[in-house]
Image 1 (cartoon, helix red, strand yellow):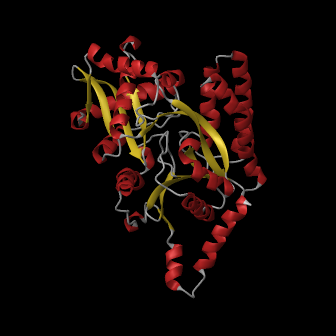
Image 2 (cartoon, rainbow, N blue to C red):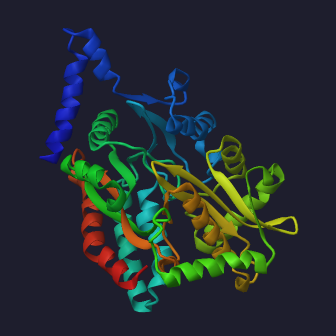
Image 3 (cartoon, one colour):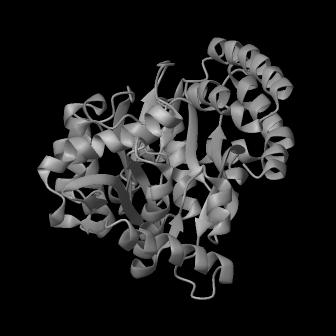
Length: 412
């Protein structure tokens, strides 16, 4: 039934393209979803909206210059899809198994997953899952799991969505499937708590929801959110700035000279401490994001030196922080992570946005009032042969029946 819905949308578009009885109507329908690559970008009519302006500032440099100058491990073809007044980036891949997980399902579900097995703290279980992932990973490469188009992929850990209807999402799905008939089509970063209508429409259109990670949401705009303990912890965290003589700086107080240090702090935390499969931001990415306002950069400065940094952006009432880092060589007792997290929550409160705190540091975030939810990828693969589909079907069953209950039980 779901597959038929997508087929009908595609066939309707094909029928319209040959319907010469009403040229004006034909033109309107054909232009509903339009695609732009680096060669046709000059033809792009960017919407005169806040989202449209933000999208242009962020996407245009990467499209013209190539993604790898900005994210070293994001080797992908970047396009833009426009539907109505919405602009969404598409990434197209065929293999690229060394890519960051933001455009490589293989990296996300196999290589990165292997690195996180240590969180289980159960050696026998870790060995068993490692062996399983190795076998499944070999099969996934044979089935070309990385032959995929991601819709609304900003190449960040969390892709925030504009105010998009389920009907628009299904229309995009049909258009992308028609353009790339040999690729799986994926919407990353879908959370039932934030995208319930939208995910329901995609499921009805034939997508399956595959869990990707457990994430944490902080409703900073709710004055009654949290409890006395969480509020006390946040107050204590914020008071560390005065205790250790740190100044919270942002905007013009962060200069071009700070950019190499910002890149270093992100590398120390997200790459060296966690994984090099995270997006590897270059100094050019940070400089461009700062200049364009695509990210709001803030930091903690002491005696002229930046020791912690964050970069956030907001879309459709939600705020997230893809750039976060601190000097991991300094004593943990200083509490740089705690200070920076308290400042982030303060920024979310000031803006009135819901804060998407991504994954990781689960107990820390729970103690400060964040609530857990699961993030999914909506995957459409029904048009592919079974030799290509089986890996997605296996992931859906394994992760929904084993992975999610395990993560819930262990509060990862």
